[in-house]
Length: 114
Image 1 (cartoon, one colour):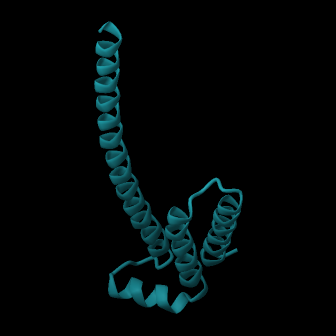
Image 2 (image 1 turned 180 degrees about the vertical axis):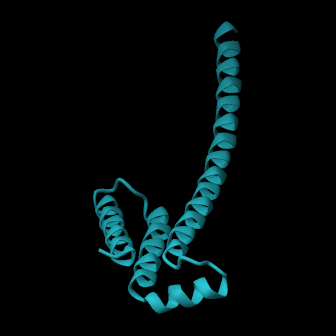
Image 3 (image 1 turned 45 degrees about the vertical axis):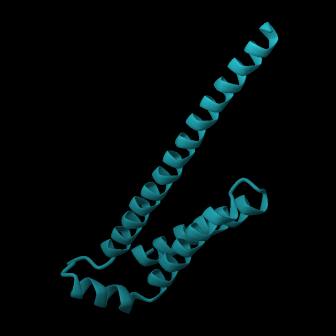
């Protein structure tokens, strides 16, 4: 089994898992699109060796299949950055919600004392 075949099979398996997760409502559609795009891109790169070989020559990569893993690594870095932004946004929303709750609780306590 060549590295291209292995990469294609792993990408296909990942695509199946993503589609099944969306179907079972375990993964939101907006996040699944990112994964589906990445899986399809990796599958296309795995099928067409000449694209990978030409890109590797252009980037001075001596072992062309390692370029597939570089693309995957860059994808993971972008995904981590995207998820970090989402976590930060949710953290800010949680902080505001906690503060509003504390204000409402204090207000309710004042009304109960009167």
